[in-house]
Length: 437
Ligand SMILES: O=c1[nH]cnc2c1ncn2[C@@H]1O[C@H](COP(=O)(O)OP(=O)(O)O)[C@@H](O)[C@H]1O
Ligand SMILES: [Ca+2]
Image (cartoon, rainbow, N blue to C red; front, side, top):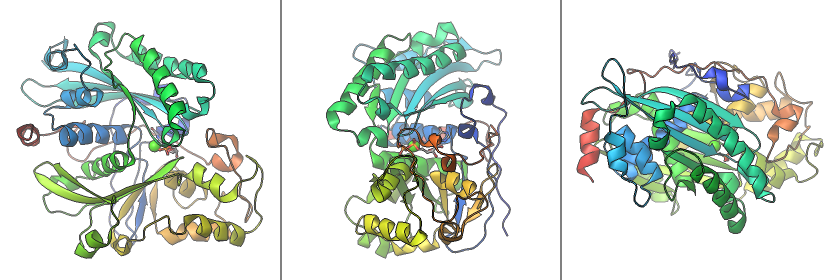
């Protein structure tokens, strides 16, 4: 049995948590087999996925050189705003000569909106490191306000207030602010989604922070999967070794689910349907990733599609009935690629919550399992499972309403990255990224 990896950092993030289940940062992982084992990890939340998004958007999509620019690239330049100058002006310099600056990122998921306030420090003539993060989450997600757009402003404002408290006044004007929405908004009719985005933009523009014209947008599914894949491989150190092995990534959100891995078998590449492969150049290497986001197959959206019925009411009495409906709904929707059986995956979000909820993994430490364990738990029950065959249907916008959706969760705000404190990208990587500009 291979020893697990423990991520931990001293950054103080816990005090701001409103929902304890969003604060789980500590994951210990065990390897249990060579074949397709699944490590269920919450390690990448809340820091990780957003950092992965930074790296993806900044280093790969727009080939920027520093983490500062990474953030500025995400927000993109507002007309007239001199982003480059702002990024390099030494607004704050700590006693050790490190330049300090901030960035604010909103993750508008289908079940909740979360703010991440990042603090970066840049040692003289070096690339910046992520030194601190503050996080707060609110439920329900933005899409719950589709028919009452005005009401969405209140939560956004509340999260902005967190940023105001966290960031020193002098930095406000130069701190970029950005929101990326995922499945909840993708699933809404375009017009409703646009109205919500417009409202958020108004609130952002009225804030004292630095906002560009496209500070608020819907992220596409491929970007969502790829950035999470980068995150987990960055955090596990897989990206450091050229040609070394990598892990796969599964994220089961409320409204969509993503898979991403690096195929090694030529046949996998050839058999993949159009739209499932994406090439990305990163850190001197080209990766051809298998990455796909299934919209509508997030836990909440799929449950409603599968079972219908009234929210919060028991909908089916037998496992077989549920299983039959699930196969019907999934038929011809999910591509089966043989190689995944032999790839080790890290899985996020509801994969974690469900596994913890039925006692398959430790709610605090995470753990490893094989996919079949989920089926056994569904059939025979886990330690905290609902009576056999009972399927409760929570609402998409507020899954926390039913007892079955509130497994025991822990918050241990500790994340230790393998070799370096904070997120650090080497000069070499920066130079490489820069040269592609
Ligand atoms: O920042 C986070 N911290 C902790 N958990 C998160 C965070 N973001 C998403 N999750 C987890 O993701 C799941 C819900 O996904 P989300 O609302 O992001 O849906 P989506 O990705 O389909 O839009 C829940 O299990 C929730 O605990
Ligand atoms: Ca998500």
